[in-house]
Structures are given as C-alpha cells and as structure tokens.
Length: 236
Image (cartoon, rainbow, N blue to C red; front, side, top):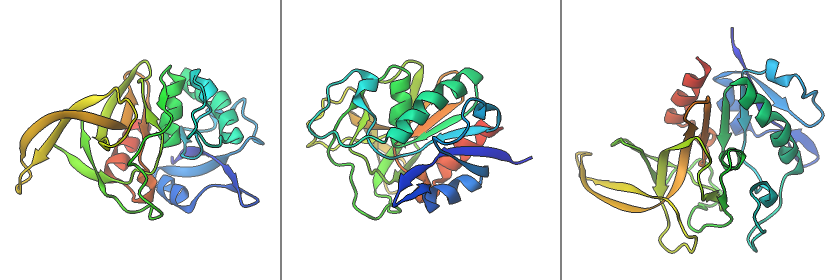
C-alpha cells in the first residue's frame, strides 16, 4: 500500500498550496497530502506516514531565545503554527519527519539547537535547479554538488542530532562558525589526496534514535539521488 506523505501548504498569490517541485519530488514516495492550518490536526499523525517540513521564511527567533538580527526577515505564521502542533505529534509517535531548508533549521531548534541568523555565500540566484556547491558526506569519500539557497544555517546542533554532510563555508563570511570538519580534495581519478579541517555549513542531519532526516539544500529542485534513497529508507 502506498504511503501518505504530508507536507505543509503555504499561502501565496492568493492561494493555498505548494510548489510543483515539492509535489513532483514527494509523489515518488507515496500519495501527497497538503496540510494547512484549516485542517483537523489533532489526529493527523494517524493519517500520515511521513511529515515534510518544507523550506520558506526564517524561523521565528523566539523559538531559540535569540534577539532578532538586522538581517532577520519575515516569518511564516502558518508554518510556525504547524511546527508547534505537528512536530511534537510525530516525534512522540516515532513517525518519520523530513525537513528541507527552513525545515532543517526548525527541527534543529526543536531539539534545542540555535541558528546563525545570517551567513554569506549560500545564495546562488534564481536558478533553483543548478547545483554548484560541493557537499561532502561524513566519514566518506562521496562528494556531490547541491544547490544552497539560504541565508541562515545551524549554529549549535540540537540534542540527539548528528551531522551527515556539509559544504565549505564561504571564507568571507562574518558568522562565527562553530563547526570545523575535514575537507577533502581529490585527484583526477577521484581519489582523496589532501585533507584539512575547515569551517563548514551543515547541509544534512539526522536524529540518532528517531526517524528524522533533514537537508539544508533543496533536493526537490534537482531530484537528488542521495536524498531520495535516504528518504525511502525512513519509509521502510
């Protein structure tokens, strides 16, 4: 039987819905159901097999007890409400949650983490399908390119969360990065030749014991093979 995948519905241009990229990407995992604040939410955890917390506006700083910075922008009150109601339900039920961009940030905050309110070098323009930043997986020689389109990122990692992948932090950034990880360079044959520790932007996380996975980049925009495989594992 096909699974039911629930994703937040956004409000834009006088409509309530979600982007074509999200709908197409998520449909390979099951039936896609959009969730809005007008839904009956008290029993929805029993109607959905996996919750998707999508990208969007900034996470409200009050969620991690921070003072708004000058680069903080708007929050999405609909998403904030759905976060508050749905994330605890799915965590308590032990059901899968996948976060994307803002979703990764919100899950990190849910588990007690904090965010850099503004970083430099991870805005790549209007072409959301273009992949140009190298991502390295932890304890692996696997490297692939992703599309980073965000201005906030994980600062302090939430309790129980683990880093799976990261990109090289833009060296001109003034954010005080807390995460320094091994960065490998490869020869023409794809073999690692050097390794140095550099500041990084966390791009993929998972929870150590719960079926929770999140991506800072946007896998739905280029149907990222790694993300597809990992999400399918959560649904088994």
